[in-house]
Structure formats: structure tokens, C-alpha cells
Length: 71
Image (cartoon, rainbow, N blue to C red):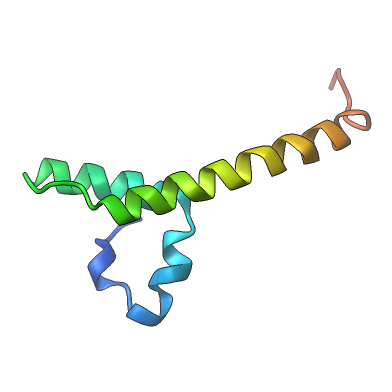
């Protein structure tokens, strides 16, 4: 993310916020500027993370049997 969230067009902002790093990077940027973090973008980042993590774990466990242990 090279630019602040407010420069993203409103139509694309919802899709943009689905990236879990967006909330954390935006919160860090605001903290560096002396502003309080935006709770909604942090909540969206946490929600996407908590949804994606179990799905990724199940997919990994399913694919683990076919992965090579030694390259």
C-alpha cells in the first residue's frame, strides 16, 4: 500500500480493505502522524484475518499430503 486509504475511490475502498494488511498499515501511518487509529479499518483487518486463517489451515492440511518433504 503506497498511498493513504482516503485517496482510494469510494467504489473500490471496500475491496481494498479486504486486504488484512490495509488496516494495520493505515493504523501505523495514522499513529506516526499523531492521529488515533481508525477502529473500523482495524476491525475489518481482524475480521478478514480471523475468517481467512481457519480456511487457510484447512486448505494447507488438505494439500499437505501431496507436498514434497524434501526438495
